[in-house]
Image 1 (cartoon, one colour):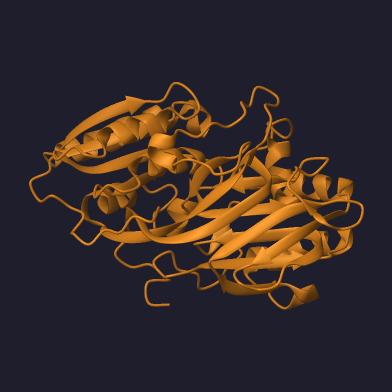
Image 2: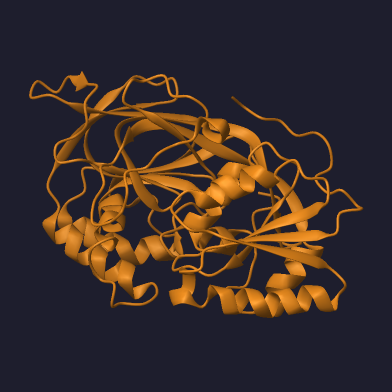
Length: 356
């Protein structure tokens, strides 16, 4: 259900900065980062409190328990995009804004909202003095991916996610982007391989290796109210923001405060075209190449097809993962729909997309 906020997000008498931290983020250095930030806050007379996550999904539980507290000025997510996703899920519908201390690999949400990725003075200044913006979100209903390599099968608590209509489906909310195809296979591969590679180089290495292994997949796709089509599936990114995958400029000009999201779709790409796409995609020069498009979008549905190319309500075999804010936790069949004004996010005073 869509949540609308009309009142100002900040209680001027609030004094508490609550931090929810993933202690494993930044190779275990996130706690030290928080200690430095905490000292900066307390030197300005601000009270802080810390919550440390213990398992997958714990950040959502914590955030949900904080969402109605009147003494909290802002909830800070310290970690990567996965941690931000969990905190945002728990806070959705609250007037308390979400702020970020980026401590992950991709850090795309922080990048979009104007945070420095390494200047803690910039980061803490935004947390204290930044601008709160009411952003949209995507609701996805899909089948969960199975457990793999100590990565648990996803669950979705109905208290903050809502109830799915499908028998085997769960609901998640997406606050940055959802993608599938070669990119989601890269994310799934990240769970098992390339752990010795740091930073964005990991995405490049895994991208090349997964492209070389790519096998053709057909899919039934319906976009908004258009007629459904059967396509040779390569890649889609359904996004609220400009960047994904650790800085790839997938949707130049995209803004999370509009009344729609954006769909970048690339069908029927060869392996060579996928390899050649990586450079233009990082620079935002991919639209128009090989039929790649970027359009406004509010709803996307995807199903697998049988041997007669008819849509069926069963998962692809092998599975076709769907990334939810960078986590390859869902799979087809899936329905993804945009809802405006779901979450307050505190960001820099000046962001490039503000007036797009």
